[in-house]
View (spheres, rainbow, N blue to C red):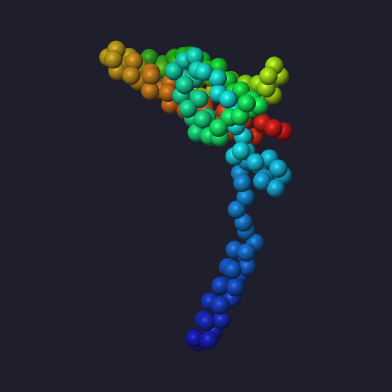
Length: 164
């Protein structure tokens, strides 16, 4: 009985080692062997015009931290926020949800030539209709959270489409 259980444990170990040898880690966005190493991408970042653009630029600077050289392209962001139509129901007398959209476009320019463009947006909501200071703080927090999410979506768009 002990030899039989030892044999099955040994067989499981051999199968596990074989399967572990067949797997490997690979990059999510591209292949380093193809010559497109996105970790080496560098940009000059344009100056932000709004607080939301500053949030997006900060997230993208973390994603592409390499110091820019004189020949590297310039990355610019145009961000806007809008309030979408709310719920039509009057079931909630107070604390009605307020829908917010943050939309941003990224443009990568080399000299006068536009190399890459992408637009992404994020929708979110906060509860409005309470005290004015609470409304102001809730709206600002919702916009900032949506801006961070939009920055991540722009980063993914750059990683997926830039340099092809």
